[in-house]
Structure formats: C-alpha cells, structure tokens
Length: 162
Image 1 (cartoon, rainbow, N blue to C red):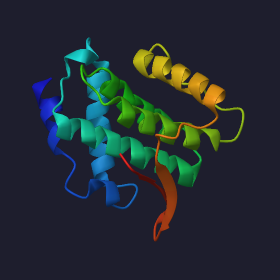
Image 2: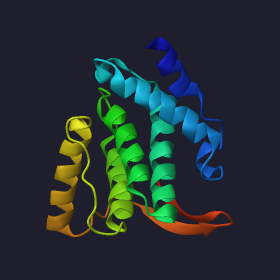
Image 3: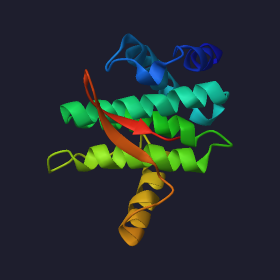
Image 4: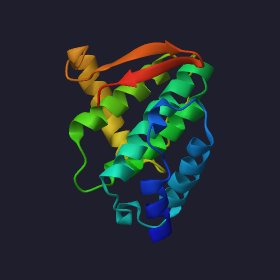
C-alpha cells in the first residue's frame, strides 16, 4: 500500500498536464489507481497534495482523451481517479466540482446509449455524480466551474482553471 501511495504522489513529472495524450505516465498512473481501488479500504490511501493534484491532472487528461476518441473507457478511468480523491479526508470541493464537470462534459458528448458508471466499484464517485447532475439540472450552469476546450497539435484538450 505504501508503494502505491508513493508512486501516485511521484509518478507524474512537472508539466504532466501539458504532456501529449496519451502518455506512458497515464498508463503507469492508471495501474496504481487500479491497485488502490482493489484494496480492501480505499480510504487508507492517504495522499499528499501532489498525489491529489496528479489524480486531478489524470482526470483532466482522461476527459480530454474521451473528447478525442469518444470512448466511455476514458470517462470510467477519470471516474476511478475521482473515487480515490473522494476517499481523501480533506479534498477540495471546488476541484472536485471541476473534475466532475470535465467528466460530465466528456460523457455528454458520447453517443447514446451511454454506459452507466459502476456504483458498486465507485460508490463515492456515483454519489457525487448524482448530486452534481441534480445540481446542474437545477441550476443549468455552475458559475464557479472554470474550464475551456482548446486545440493543440495533438487534438482538442480540456484546459482547466483548478
């Protein structure tokens, strides 16, 4: 467990969010996310701020990949990273809203019928997802969430203001 925590906290190099999509770092980080989710208690994976930031950047990158390839798998990977973030004792609610908004936007662009997220595997994420979707349906827009879609040499990408 300590090894997984250390890898999540240190695997992403500076500038990870701006690297080309996909990258080997994404694969390595996803492997650690899977290991964490398969443990008996995800909440035992207490990350430092760099580890949490790496997971948010992973969410941004997976949502961008979903935007490019229109595959639910990338949204599911982002949701899995959010499950770990949501298991942290003191996560930043604003950053969670931005992460959920990215996933929601990418998910909304998928062709119907869209697969559902697995509430047994991702209970915290699915609860936050349901609340977010209800809030968005009620408010139509959440002004505190800031992101845009930019185009780079390797394709469209979400650009977040975490």
